Image (cartoon, rainbow, N blue to C red; front, side):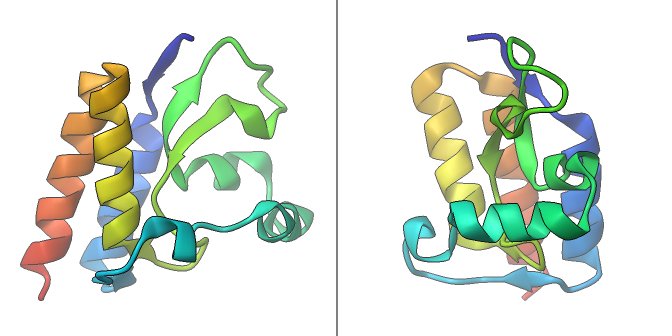
Length: 115
């Protein structure tokens, strides 16, 4: 799989955190991660590029017009979630995507500094 860092998503997440649009939750990401219905509802009102802003990874082997192109979600389309960044960081580390792991860690530190 040819997954690389989505720099646009990093910029977007940083701006959201700086604007205070964050959840410093202690739960499990699976409790907050948008499901397929929520993703589709978001896409009915927004462009795919906006959907991509909520994902730290890009799978270049998938089509440009596909949800499958976007990996490592970190928020719920409203706020950045601490547990989403932790999940992205851990999964990226497990799968060997050090650039995504590093970006998630930097965003996590920024989020935790906003307390």
